[in-house]
Each structure stands twice: as C-alpha cells, then as structure tokens.
Image (cartoon, rainbow, N blue to C red):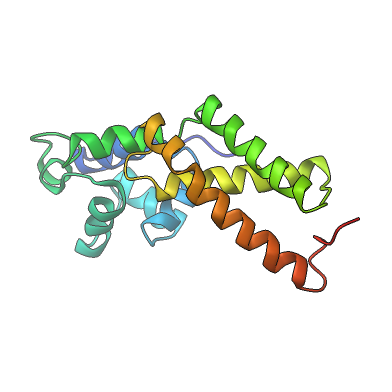
Length: 175
C-alpha cells in the first residue's frame, strides 16, 4: 500500500499537485515520467522541499498545457488554452461508443485474417488501437473527430496485421 501524500508546504507545491490531480495524474510514477523526472523529485516539488528547475516547469507547460504564470504566481487560469485543458481531461475518459467501434474493428480484422487471439490479448489489441486513435486526434473529446479517424485506424491495423503475419514468432499466424 502506498503511503499517503504529505500536504504541500508552499503555494507552488499546492499548484503543482492540483495540476497533477486535475489532469488525472493519480499514478505519480507515470506522471513524473511524462515530465522527465523521478517520482521522488515530483514529491519534493509538490511538498515544497525543492523548487522545480525551469526545464521541469517548461515540461509542465509543454506536456500538459499548464499556464506558467499561474504555476508561478497563482494568477490567471491553470491552463494556457482552455480547449487543451478539456481535451486533456477528456483523454482520461473512455468513450464507450468509440471504444466499442474500435473493438469491433480489431475483432473483425483479426477474424478476416484468420487470427484467433485469447481474450486478454484481444483486449490488449483493442485498448492499444483505442489509444492510437486518441493520440492521433487533435481534440480527443470530440466523438465525431474520433469516428472520422476510424478509416485511418483500420488502414494502420491492416498494415500491422500483415507485417505481423509475415514475421515468424509473432503468434499471429492463422490457426
């Protein structure tokens, strides 16, 4: 069991933690990796034991769209671009209709190639395809945009399946 986070001792630390929680950074290790630092450094910055370098603050801005003025002073909005903020938050919420469409696409393409995957492997393929779709979208919260990218995803998956079938040892040969 992870130990509870200690309360930030500085205003900057409070804002850093608030930003992490706002963008869905419950997994501290993954969040820290995204901005290029270690978990212990992130805890030190959030607690107020150390101040982040300009490189780290810049990473908050580049990776999450944080408003540096807000981070440093508390004035203004948390995010430099309000649409980017909503897209970030939406990126952590699975859209069931889109996920279902991606799941059907992955299942149908594997079936067409004569490939039968165990349930866990199939779910891994489906979630990986969904993540690729989300990464490709300019606005991951826009369901219409996600649906319009399904043909791109289908082409990408077909290419991947073809190369996997041709490569020995991939386990993707017809049964």
